[in-house]
Amino acid sequence: MELLTVTDADDRRLDDYRGLTDMALRTRSDPSGGLYIAESTKVIARAVAAGHRPRSVLVQERRVEDIRAIVGDLDVPVYVVPDAVAEAVTGFAVHRGTIASMHRPELPSVREVIEGASVVLILENIGDHTNVGAAFRAAAGLGADAVLVSPGGADPLYRRSVRVSMGTVFQVPWTRIVEWNSAIADLHAAGFDIAALALREDAVTLDAYVADRPERVALVMGSEGDGLSRTVIDAADTIVTIPMAGGVDSLNVASAAAVALWAVTT
Image (spheres, rainbow, N blue to C red):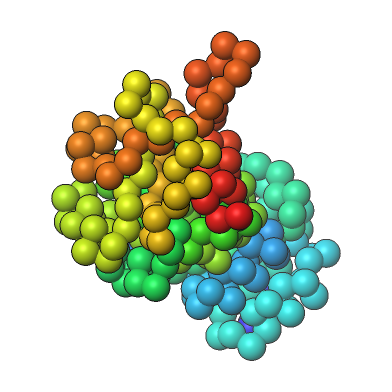
């Protein structure tokens, strides 16, 4: 770790943190594969523990010793900046005092992620980054073995997703589905029962499903507005619904994921 004091907000070494959108970070030609932003020492520690490599770290003076305990043995520049510089560069108050620019890891295949798993959570076209982060936190806390994210879903490594997940996006094995039919074939070949959570007249209740739970379960949660696609509904082995009361027909997708995971893992 190399400590470098930077007092000029226009210093080019801080460009990774300068008003870049997550899309811009992902598509940067240098380095190949793109970057993502990890905020707070807790999140950075979990990313590093998962084998992710920091490209650099921006840290406020009061957090230097905290970050030293995490990246002290790594060959990475650590830019120590005054609070005003951190805010001027990022465009927001850096309350947690530490941000890292991280290299995006190469994602594994669906087959690799589900190997040995018994409970998998699948997020189809979940567009809200808060919901994605909350779903990952539920997956980690309630014992899911892996998470699969559909091609059109929000990025789990988006800054808000990572923050809401409390860094559990680095803890739970996950990958992005490239093509649905191939992923469905991989799940069925591995012996998974694909349980799609949807409002259908022919759906079985969650308690009835877990009373005779298959050995390997893939729970599929649909998008916030449109729900599950016809492709997933048609491929599902079971349609499952969470019984509701009070005139409410469904839960927020992250809440529904937590309820369903709790039911199938306890």
